Image 1 (tube, one colour):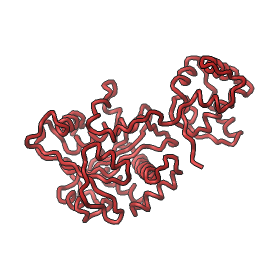
Image 2 (cartoon, rainbow, N blue to C red):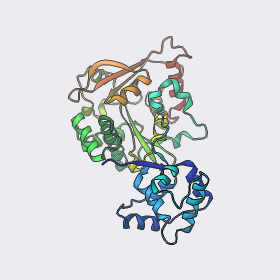
Image 3 (cartoon, one colour):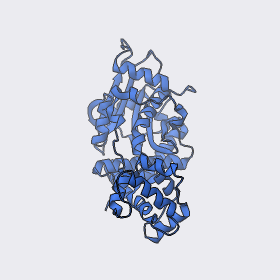
Image 4 (cartoon, helix red, strand yellow):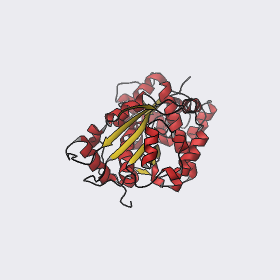
Length: 357
């Protein structure tokens, strides 16, 4: 049975903070284990921050209020529910859960699928760019990021956001005919030998919540992939060069919710990460001095919609073996109107690029 992911509502999280109510990790973990739910490190913190978690831990919090010594927590529930005309003494746990929780991903907008037309809504001038994305700090983190891609892709292929992660990874391996461990090695090899910014971690408020891998290719290699004559898993560091105006977006994924991901934040900061990567790896200047060429894969309906949102169009060829459709986008530098969508795209990439380039 798939997990039911739930998150405490913003109002209830604020109420707990205002009342200073905080069952200790030891108390929460002890009750969760004693009742057969188990416990993983950081779960209580994510729950109280309003991050989506396995719904059983929201239920643990509800049940814990009735335990001996949990009067402050019980009072917090009573006061919050009274403000909503609910009698905490007679209400069932399910009723209480519906009042203190919201479904994970509620009101989620896919900012990537919204595309370049909605990009101006995404920026938060209070947040430094270095806090939005960064390269992996270690090989382990790089390998972890590729694992997110395989999990995310498999769940999208299955149209099941709660599909077990190991099963989702198996689905992606079967579709791509490329083992996760081999792809992890390739991604680390390319990014560590060519430019670490080819593989970027999309950052949430406290931790990485997604990843993006964009490959700056030599022109002839880009055309080989576009024509369907070469697979992306055959690439070597020699096939890449920085800067390059021939970019291949190979991966873009969110961190699994059960592993600390944040569905609501991912697509927003994922868009900014993409633009920063493109601007940096192509060394984009405004006005543009040379044509820009982008290539990517529509591995599922969600990735196709996102590519269309960024005005990509089908190439008409597919990746060998995996049979995944290729999509492309070209921005011509000659006669590019500043007020056009492409002109806006170039302006953003040049503004967001890494100044150390």
